Image (cartoon, rainbow, N blue to C red; front, side, top):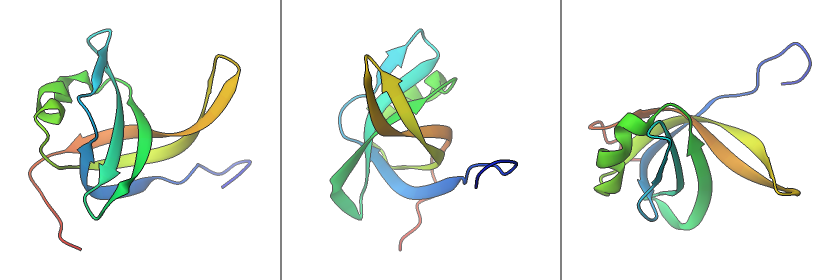
Length: 95
């Protein structure tokens, strides 16, 4: 990707939240996620406009995500975070 090209979109299956997500402005979600296949690697994630999924995410059930990787610039620091574009429940893929 680069000038004139879109940034790549990724899919992760069987993802869980490390703790209950934060619901921001009743519309957005801030959370930490990990894959059931590798629970030791945890990523910070943001999901703009996906607050409707809060209850399902807070219940701890696994889900699938479509996401992009982005730099988060906040308070003078830059960190890598997952920007979740969509969340799906109910279809678990075994690798």
